[in-house]
Length: 45
Image 1 (cartoon, helix red, strand yellow):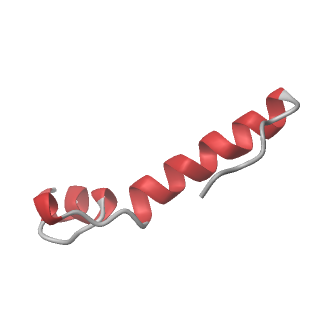
Image 2 (cartoon, helix red, strand yellow):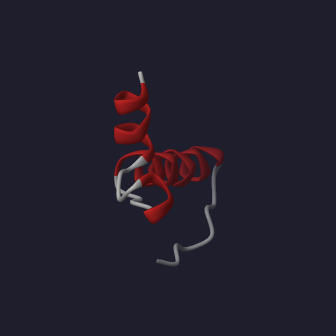
């Protein structure tokens, strides 16, 4: 999804944090057997 260009540092940080949240908790990968990075990490520990 494309986002509008952030106008302030705070807006930029919101986009970055949302991206990190998505990657760690919603981005499933076949390389991790269909798990998110968070699920994969917790399973490995």
